[in-house]
Length: 289
Image (cartoon, rainbow, N blue to C red; front, side):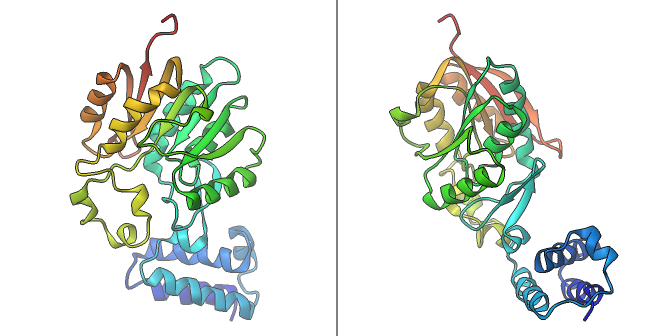
């Protein structure tokens, strides 16, 4: 079987559950993964024979996709903000929605004094903090998560992005007081769990059956982590420090009220690529106070 025939076989298997464009995209990504070839190499060598190992790997991965497993987990990696990151079922899949809070964090960090300290809380794969470190070359970034399994993924991504000199990974519970060893940060950014208890019962299977509930469920009203972080983690901010949150649809006003109730001033509310309000930047205290 040639590479082209293997691609067509996989695409045709996917067609009953995907539209033509999605089926082609998934088949192409799986073929790249199974063969270790780049897209342009596959196009150039489309009539080359596929190895038995590549055919077996394609069949295995295609079966996982057909059972509803997200493509990112099947591939074991996903692209976010120009970075190819390791992902598995212990971390959320980085999504375009998260670019909104990432942009806020990067833009604010660029205006901080030299060698700013940034904390990415509830880091998961580390995607936000690593994007900050990639774009702000003097930033010292700490990735923090309660999940040891998530931390293992984040550590792999630190290494793959060649950021071991400026990015560290620690275990911390966002619902509790920050451990003293963390010290003080110029900016904290977080994409915490924000799905309500009711919404958890309504998630599509691709999310509910595969992505970690620990990283999704934000309590009865979805705001448990915002309450805790706004209250407790201001102790980990320098005077005049900044806090960036991602939040779910319709949660913006409630999240901003929680921030204001805890002494923060709202500086900016930002929208994602779908024009949905998705992130906020706030400042705590005053630099002269």
